[in-house]
Amino acid sequence: MQPQQPTPRRPRAKAPIVPPASVTGRSLGIVIGIMVFLASLTAGAVYIINQSAAAWLRDVSSEVTVQVKPEGRVEDVEKTATAVAKFLTGQNGVRRASLLTLDQSAELVEPWLGQIAAIKELPLPRLVAVQVDRDNPPDVTTLRAALTTKFPTAELDDHRAWQSQIRRVTGSLAAAGLAIIALVATATVAIVVSAARSAISSNRDIVEVLNFVGAEERFIARQFELHFLKLGIKAGIIGAAAAGLVFFLMPTITEFMSGAAVHAEYRRLVGTGRLDMMGYVCLLIVVVLIAGICQLTSRYGVRRILDAQNQ
Amino acid sequence: MIRFENVGLRYGLGQEVLRDVSFHLLPGSFHFLTGPSGAGKTSLLRLLFLSLKPSRGMAYMFGKNITKSSSGQRAELRRRIGIVFQDFRLLDHMTTWENVALPLRVHGKRQSEYAEDVTELLKWVGLGDRMFAYPPVLSGGEKQRAAIARAVIGKPELLLADEPTGNVDPQMARRLLRLFIELNRLGTSVIIATHDYQLMTQFTAPRLMLENGRLNIHG
Image (tube, rainbow over all chains, first blue to last red; front, side, top):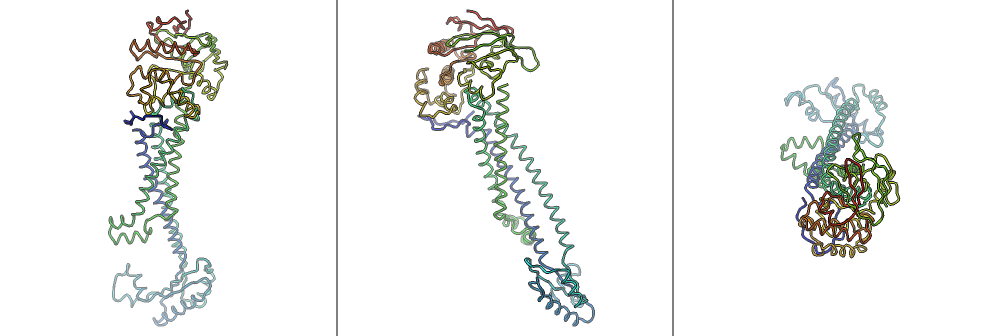
């Protein structure tokens, strides 16, 4: 049953052949909007995780650490560490080499030893943080050999083991994210197809009438394709916009839900949680895909009705 | 115009619902198609309307062999046929005017080309003051007249009517019959499928009688 319409007094220029507003159409719009919202949230989350993982790897690979073993007197270790930092500063591909102070070194072991007064009395190795030039990185093997030759107690760590661990973890997260996207996409497709078929069936009488007034199959299919494409785009944009708003408000949401300390940790891991331009493009892709599914489903739905009518 | 030779129709692997149906209808003819329920009237109409293909035999409409036609050819042939149903089949979201204009619109004509014809036809069938009403507010008789107008707006050569008076009162049924007779007088071939014997007595026309899937022509 169509909603009440005001009675026109003259022919409408292009009265829609497929009614734009109907109960089944509204239901389908709601379904599409919700599924696009969920799919967009998933796609956006996977995108953020991938971006964060890439940032982690960039950060880790842009720094190497030199450890000066605490052998001999404390003054000698200090002197050696200072010399190592100066040596590294002059090397090709090294942007900066900074010697961590004793206090900074003590802070690093505090999680394991606790805040004890005697921590600085312990024979802690001295660390030199070396920032490499990403565009022109040094040859680590050559650097290691030169360093060891000149300073036998110095050891260079290029964090390779740590990088491969990060890659494994981020790879697993990305795979899990893609699996979730695949599941959400499959559910979205199934629900949209089912809802679109139901909407087409409820408009079966329109297909029949068009068929028997001599409309070609292409014409009939096009009427429904345009209708469902517009519906898919409209509802999809609403769903994606809602998801985009969630991402935009993510910093506020996480701070509100978890408190400042957890929020800071969250920020350290995944940044602000907001999407950049490419992230929003991902949401747009979701809208386009879902609208395309609606269009294709309507095309095949109409063909099936026509095939049943014209045996 | 229409020639069927030993046409048989079967749905799936079941028994034939039409057997050895043969007839030849000339342009400008008027026939009643009648028979008891289940005799095959609707199936024959569906064949005439190109919604089904014969399982066997030869069938020609407007000189074309419909047993070998493609969907595009069938759509083209349907434009030469108008069809009226017992349940009207008007689109509720379109006005009476828009319903009647629909065939011309799907045939690609511009509204400026057909607007006047649609208005004149609606006045001719007595719906001049209901042109912009929506079907749900029309009476049964008004709906059927709108459906007839839609069926003939494209000036079809053949008009098929499946129990067109089934949902109207006897007085309106007589009025509708006069409409069909007038259309026939203007050159349209008419086939009315009905089991309303009272209707058939009001106008002398040959009867295509179906019984157990076999056709006999009387008159």
